[in-house]
Length: 427
Image (cartoon, rainbow, N blue to C red; front, side, top):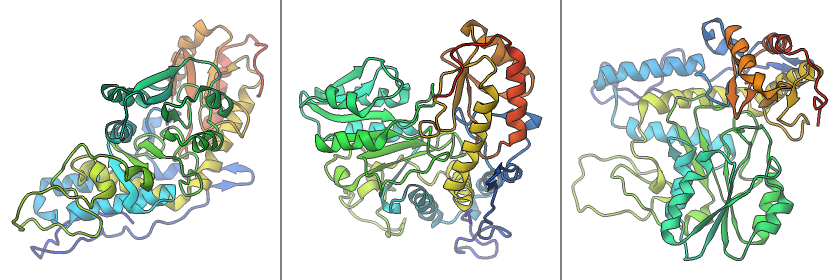
C-alpha cells in the first residue's frame, strides 16, 4: 500500500495512517505465452483518447499515484493533517520501495530529483587527485556528461570518447583506459538509439583496473530489471519520471557502500537524519555536523516532498506489485510486435532488433530521413504520441500500451512510406 501521512482528524497527535480502501496492492497477470493483454491499461488514465508511445520522454502517473497526489495536495490545503512523523516516514517508505526495485537495502538509497542529482553527488564528492580522468561518450545524453564537468575544477580531465559503435563495448573500453582513469560513466540504455550496453562486460573491465563504473539507468529501469546485488557497479543514478511513472523532479541514486565511504559530503541539511533516528523538533543543543548519515548525507534537500514523493511511492508500489520481470515481458512483446510489423515496411531500424540487445525503445527512419518530420506529424495527427529525436522517430511503449495500439501505430507508419529500403532488416 502507499501512504499519505496525516494527523487523525479527531486527535491532535494521531499516528500516520493509510487512506481507506488502499490495502495491499493486488497482483495482476497481464502477460501470457501469447503476448500481453490490456490488463495494465486500466490502471492508467485514458490519455485523452490518444496513444502514448513516449515513455522514454516521460511516463504517466498510474491512477493510484494520481489519487495519492490529490490526497497530498488536500493535506497541504489543510496542513493540520500532516504529522511531524511524516517528514521522516514518507522518505523512509520511498527508500524502501526503491531498494526493493534494485535489490539494495533502503539505507543505501539516495533520494534526488533527477538522474543528474546522483551523478553530481559523485562528481563533487569523490576524492579526486590532480590528473585523474573520467571517461564519457561524446555523443552520450547530456545528463550523463554535464555533472562530471564540475570535477575539472579539481584538475580532473573529462575525456569524451569519439562516436564509434552505438554503445561503448568492453573491448574498446579496455583499450581506452589509462593509468589516470578513475571513473567510466555511461548510459545503460542509449536514449537516442535504444541500444543496451553490456554492463557485465564493462564492469569486468573496470573491476580489473580498479575503476568506478557509473551508470545512468534512466532509460532502462522500470522496463528492464536491474539488481545491484548481482552486478555491483560503483553507482547508478536514475530519473523517476520516465519508466518509473513518477512526477517530474523525482529521481534517486545508489552508491556502493565502499565507494561512499571514500567520499566527502559537500552539503549539510538540518533535516538529514540517519535511518532509525526519529525527528525531534523540540530538542535544543549545539549545532554540529553529523558523521553517521551514510547515504542520507547526499539526499536532495526537502525529502519530505509530499506532492512529488507520495505519488511516486504509489507508482512504485504499483509497479513492484505487478513485478518488473512481468512488465519487462509485456514491454518486450510490444516491441517484438512493432518490429515485426515494420520489418518489411521500408523503414530502417536505428535501434537494435535482437532481443538480447534492446530495451523498450524502437527508433526508425524513413528511407529518406528528410521525410521523418512528416511521418512524425502523421503520427501526431492520428493521435499517436511518439518522439522525434536526432532526426529519427522514436517509439517507446510501456506497460499501459496494448497490442492493438501497436498495430494501429504500425499501420499509420506503414501508410506514411511505400518505398522499400535495403537496410530494413533485423539485427
